[in-house]
Image (cartoon, rainbow, N blue to C red; front, side):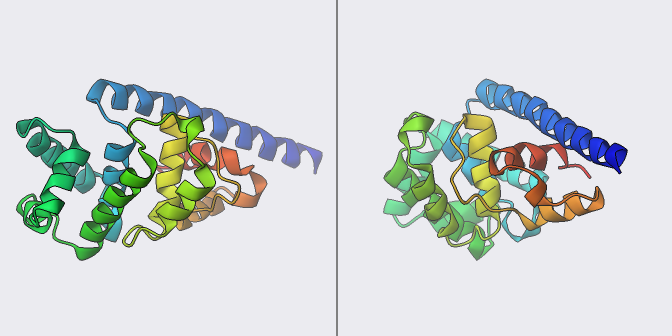
Length: 198
């Protein structure tokens, strides 16, 4: 019994370490690519509807290319298009046709206006309010937890006091004979990244 418990503890420590190592790689990739919290959240929002990471990455890059051509940050470009009544057309043009994804992007524009994620230091943002706002973004649903995980592990945001668990993480941990309750809330974002490919 003691050996089995020791193995569980070792597995938990290993998952957290792997997740932190992977998060360091994502941080480097974001820094090299010029990504910031807003761009990362757009990428997360484009996972809505089960389209997957390849779709989300391709569409994020298409939007970034359009923003670069306009000599604007992605937020400024999308916000300008929204104010002109052209956001739906721009999103349609790059193949983002799912209404939930469009709604999520609109919600993220409002979220950026409220929290200034691109410029505020992570410690200066009330993460409990931010997490609540993410959960209220139409189109994110379960991805609100994932979005918060990304902000914690990639950008150093604090962990909100009631951080939830994605269904995907719950299922992946079940494969390993573990439950989310066996981890502290601030460990969940790293565990999520460790089991991503299971």
